[in-house]
Image (cartoon, rainbow, N blue to C red; front, side, top):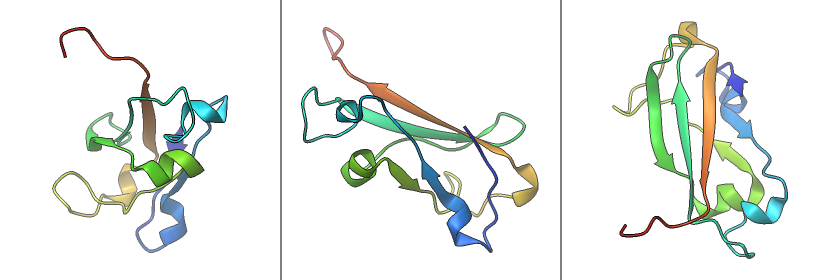
Length: 97
């Protein structure tokens, strides 16, 4: 999904997502996913945030609040919008890991 971000508008960092069926995202309902990660890239496809594991509350409610900061804890440039947000769902364990 693409998301325009403006640090002066805090609600612009609200990212909703849907995993269907919803139980596949909820850490409390089987089949429990091993983890869900979020990755955010700028309009030039450079990674600005992540990959980072989503907290359980974000997985359960299927809403993630990004603070607009990159991996160096600096605010991202609104001119680099739209940002591409990817959610990665891991549902199995690799043997030997």
